[in-house]
Image (spheres, rainbow, N blue to C red):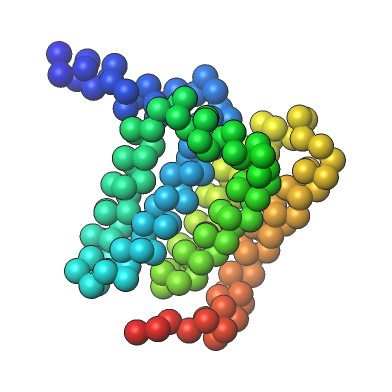
Length: 172
């Protein structure tokens, strides 16, 4: 009885509703961005920031709350509609900058940074694949440029990490 309530709850319907793949991919991208923002903010808090496991758990809980409790209608009205207006800025530049900041400021090892970039690249690629026919030539060119950027970040991870680490050292 309780398991049936959970399966029929808003959690499963909001998170696992793959009837609209664009919405699912966009929600996953927004969830990843929220995870990164919460991670970077709570990293500065002395109580939580000192314990990496607690930091990851708190960030995951906040981002999962977003994914679970935001209604599709609200998400469409307040995230996707402005996305149509701002276009590629929200889809490409902001997530790219957030992930770059997150991967190089969180003291991840090289393999974890590469997995992060690969995961972002897969979500980005799937999103682009579902929309490339409806995009203009200029929009597709911007998507290609950022796909190349993701590939560069993935391939030259160590080299770029040393440059970023020298340019923007950690403040203690």
